[in-house]
Image (cartoon, rainbow, N blue to C red):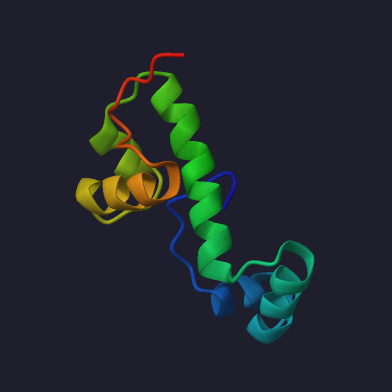
Length: 92
C-alpha cells in the first residue's frame, strides 16, 4: 500500500499474498498500531496525498491516485481529518 495507495485489495487478499490470515493481520494491526485495516489504509492514503498536494498536484488527481472513488469523498475524509479542505492554502 505504501507503493500503491490506490490498491483496493482486501485484507484477505493481502493475507493470501503473504501467507497469513486476515484475522492474524487484523490482530497485528490492532495490537501494533491500534488501528483497523481500513483506518490504517486511510492513514497511508492521507500521508501520500499530503506529499502530492505539497507538489501542487491537483486535488482530483490526488484523490484518484490515492484510491478514493471520487474527489468529493477524498475532500470529505481530508476535512474530517485535518479540519480544512485539501485545496485550502494555509498561511503559516
